[in-house]
Amino acid sequence: MMIWTGVRDMTALGHETGSTAVRVGAGLFLLILSTIFSLNFLWGHRIVENLRSGRTRYSSWVVTPTDYDRFRQIDGHFANREESNDYRSLKAVPDEGVEVVFSRDGVLIGDRYFGLASTGLNRFDKAAMIRSDPPMLEFGMVTTSATNISTLRFFRIHSVLRVPVASDAAIQAEKVAGHFQAVLRGEVIVHPDFWKRRIRFGLVGAAVCAGLAGLGFLLADRNDELDNIPLFLAVAGTIMAIGGLILALKSWSFDRSRRPR
Image (cartoon, rainbow, N blue to C red):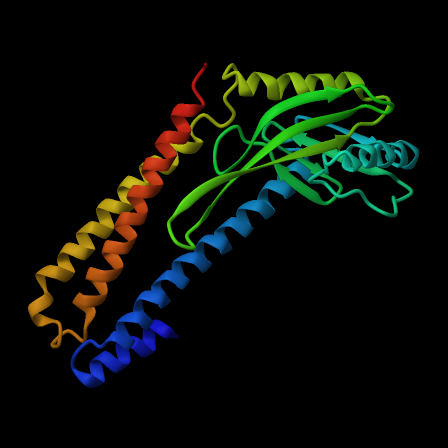
């Protein structure tokens, strides 16, 4: 709507104004952002469905209500020592227990999914087995965020994810811990083409959008005749080309960090 009203007013006035420029720019930004969020939601839904169906299942167990109650008590002791868990324990446990399903890069605890990638803005930097009764798995989590109150600054938020383990699934949990430790050491690379595909997508997208921006600049003299389409191509193409280059650069950086250390 913002893009449409901005272009409509530019056409009616015969020239660009500050108001129309802001509306077109903000509309493009919101359109890109909403598209990213929609794709992310669909991607997350697919991940969970693949886990539940068994297509990407690496290991799984069912935590009985008795085991879960003991896990909740032990987890509470950790929380009292300022080591709160990213996973919030259920207040009421179903009679059938709580299923825990691991993939090679994530875990589904009941109906809550946690990604366990070794690179990216949300990643894990530690995997360990806690030999309590019942045992549990602990992951150190790192979230990278940014603030631009005065200047753009990046910072990392460290937290802990503790996963309940069934009392009869200690061997399976050891295997899971070993897998994620191997991932951290670079001995196992999950989805080796993950970041490479994003590098290619970013570069191809940047090239296409740069071409559209160039076309917009070439047709700038005919902007009024073409109902401000050249202006739209120049602005949108430039913004999206820069976004594609940033995506390719960050993906290249993340891909490099997964190499054996």
